[in-house]
Amino acid sequence: MRLKALLLCAAVALPGAASANELLRVYELAQQNDMQFQAAAAQRDAAIEAKPQARAAFLPQVTGGYMRGRSFQDTTYNNSAQFGPPRRDVFTSDGLQATLNQTVFNWQYFQQLLQSDDQVALAAASYNAAQQNLVLRVASAYFNVLSAADSLRTSQSEKKALERQLDQAKQRFDVGLAAITDVQDSQARYDLTLASLISAEQILANNKEALAVITGENTSKLTTLQDDFPLPPPTPENVDSWVASAKQGNFDLLTAQLQADISKRGIDVAWAKHLPTVGLMAQYSDGEQGGLFGAQQTAREIQLQVTVPIFSGGATQSGVRQAKATAAQYKAMYEGQKRVTEQQTRNA
Image 1 (cartoon, rainbow, N blue to C red):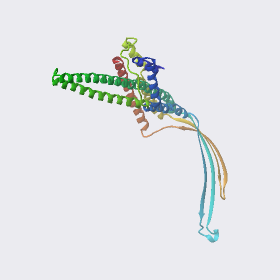
Image 2 (tube, rainbow, N blue to C red; image 1 turned 135 degrees about the vertical axis):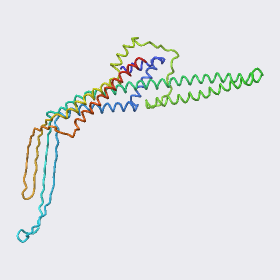
Image 3 (tube, rainbow, N blue to C red; image 1 turned 30 degrees about the horizontal axis):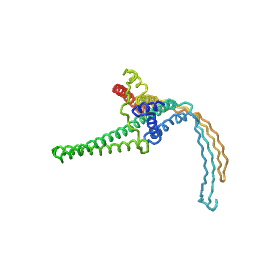
Image 4 (tube, one colour; image 1 turned 90 degrees about the vertical axis):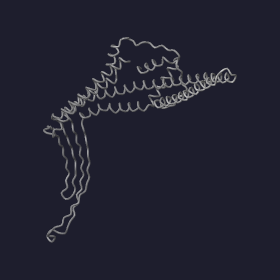
């Protein structure tokens, strides 16, 4: 609803409610067909899967397997007179196995679960920023087309006026009331207008193509701009209030803040590799061995496994240092974005 309100505010330059609806229709087309926005939506859908993936690490992990095989054993006796001729034994085997692993304690998984909340929030903020950017791109492209059409009408009117002046200059010259330089001057201004007209036609065509890239459709005749429309001042007329509002609601700033929070949580994720992990493993197997000494075997096993990291070649310490450097990077980017947001708000 906020985005539609922005479009309606932009439509104050258009005559009548039908024109505002036209701009909304163009925006709805852009929502469906703009590839940049579709990519942002797909990126959001992919990013929000971080939460269930992080949660899955705490749920039971069940694997199963089945094995069926046959082996051949050839035996040749050195004393064949005593033990007999060479023989071949064939052994068949069937095996079924199921394994369940359950995490009991893993601090790294817990930190990644907390980190996934910020990742989901970042995905939503990035999508909202893309949606807001789509509003701006649609409005800009739409009004560029209207402005180019208005410039083309101006060039066409100027061409007609100069064409009449050229005819009058030629008539005055034919009857001896004007010099040839007057005709040449009118001809030059007329030729310049023709060049401007061709340029205006090209600009209009280019702007229509730019709008078609966003909407996926070629636009036909659009509403013309009003000759006069109101430009109300911002409310409140206090720049500090707008700066404060931008610091709370600017999507670029919110994205930078969430990235800083995610990278800060990444330090805890990296450091958690120093801690032991506890897991529960349960296994069931059922197999059959064929041959002369064949047997049926069934086994059940349950283990509580404690894994203590002792030395990893310095990789864990390096990962912690890397995470700290990354967190410092994103913190600096957040502070920089905060300054840029304030500057842009004051300029606007």
